[in-house]
Structures are given as structure tokens and as C-alpha cells.
Image 1: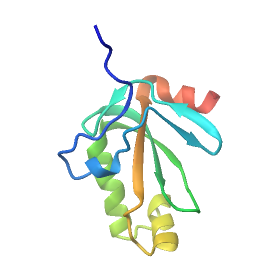
Image 2 (image 1 turned 135 degrees about the vertical axis):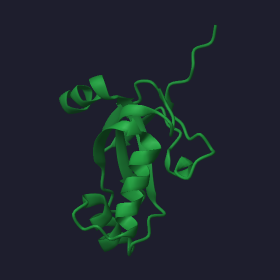
Image 3 (image 1 turned 120 degrees about the vertical axis):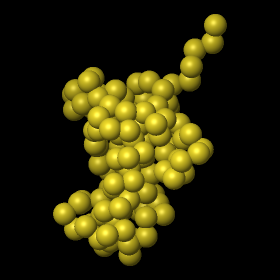
Length: 121
């Protein structure tokens, strides 16, 4: 019996699907983070890593109990509204002239174990 693939996957059907990277792992600041499960836009209670594809790469590790697509839509709304209290929105305002085209998400792990794993590594 084949195992389900591990990683972060876009569903292909929702508004944020294009933002979720199909990855089993990611190198961030020289460290490898491996996905600890199978996650989709519709997953909930996850640790996620946001970033952008610019030379001034900024990474943000977040956690949510809500569905990933709801959380990400909220972040994209902060960018569109120029909410300068949100570090991600500030980055996209200053570096990308308010364009959110390079915004992406990598889903890392379940919330209950992921935070400890990310911090201790």
C-alpha cells in the first residue's frame, strides 16, 4: 500500500491555491525545513511559513487553528489595505510597491508539534 505524499499542496480550486507551494521541504536562511505531514489549502491547525520571491527575502513563521485559506486571505487583505501594523504588509508596501504577486506559503506541520520543532532546530 502506497503512502500519501508528504508536503504542502495546492488544491487548485480556491483563491489562494496559487499561493501554496507544492513542496516537501524548503531551505530558509540556510536551514532545511521538512514538511511533517500532508497539508492543503483546506488544512487547519498548522504551522506555516510565508515568504516572497524577492532578493530581499523575508520569512515569517505563523500558526493558525483556522483553515489555511482563511488565514492567508486575511494576510493578503492586510497587503491590499496597506496595514502597516502587519510586518508582511509593510514588506510588500515598501519592497514590492503593494503588489502581492510574489507572496507564497509553505505548510510545515500540525500546530500541536510544529512550533517546538521549528524553534528547537
